Amino acid sequence: MSQKFLKHFFIWSGVLFVLCILAVVVFDPFFQYHKPIKGLKAVLTDKEYQCVGSLKTFDYDSVVAGSSVAENYYNDWFNQGFDCNVIKAIRSYGATADLCFLLDIAFEHQDLKYVFYNLDPSALVADPETTYALTGCPMYLYDDNYFNDIAYWFNKGVLMEKIPYLIANSTIGDYDENNSYNWAQWKEFNSDMVLGLYIRKPSISKMKPANYYEDVLKENLALLESRIEENPDTVFYIFIPPYSMMWWDNIYREGDTEAYLYNIERAMEKLLSYKNVKLYYFQNDREVITNLENYMDILHFSPEINHYICDCLISGKHQVDKSNYQENIDDMRRLSYEIVEKLVKPYEDRIKVDIYDD
Image (cartoon, rainbow, N blue to C red; front, side, top):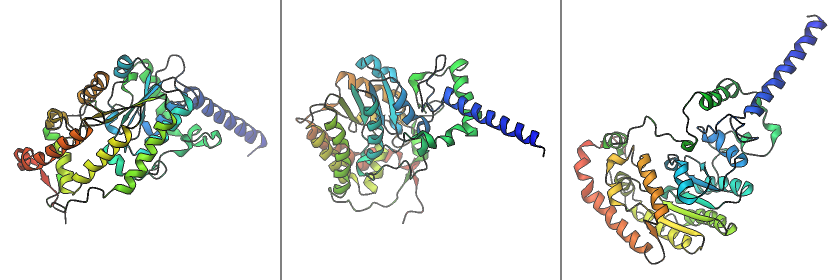
């Protein structure tokens, strides 16, 4: 090759590299450097890649923090009901450590009026360590080191797919920014879906002691409590969502009923000691959890239930305090055994059984 050819090759290669970096930095579909530029929407559809960036760069004063069951909230329900500007801090697993990691980013960048925190029962028994790296998340997007963003700048998927997707949804699509991370479109919520996806354990395990998960429970509660204590001017609306009665059937067969009820009871005792916490309990909402038409599987409910939960947070319905939390736990205990002894019986001929259970 001639020197002239090599010179032009390196020049044009350098130009191409610079253009790639400029395209990513200007359009920034993962919002690492700035909020959407004028004329583009906040198209949030990929939480593993966008959640951290949006928490760092967007303008907001409140967050909805939670697992996949919190993704279908319409942001403006909270904005209108609480006079706030909310964005989502979502992690599919909803483990306490992961959500606290996201809350730390939010508190670092904004003064928060409210945290609307979806507390899943499984989060109280999850590993109290973050799982982002373990599950293959793009960790170069989770830190503040721009030097490792080369994986972002020269990513074919970002250049050829994510940027065009952002532009298309902002200009010719009907994307609604209030539906960030919403996955409910095209999904079906009915008893056929629930029973088709529920693989029932045929045997019933011995019931675990109530304090079976005590050690990990304490660690997870300590993580959440520390964020509450460190931010006394933020009001934490903590709500425990309504999983379907088939979820209760499942944990009964796993021998977890008493342990999970114990965990929730201990969590309530701890959380209700804070002045900046408002606690809501939906697990014992009989009308919701016994109606399988509200669900896609044993725990994921329809957006209508998300709307119902938000309305309850606004109105105060289902709020628990020191005077009635024990009553709610006792009611749920009675309902949980009524479920396995009576309420699931009409569905048993439609429930699939795990033939590999040993």
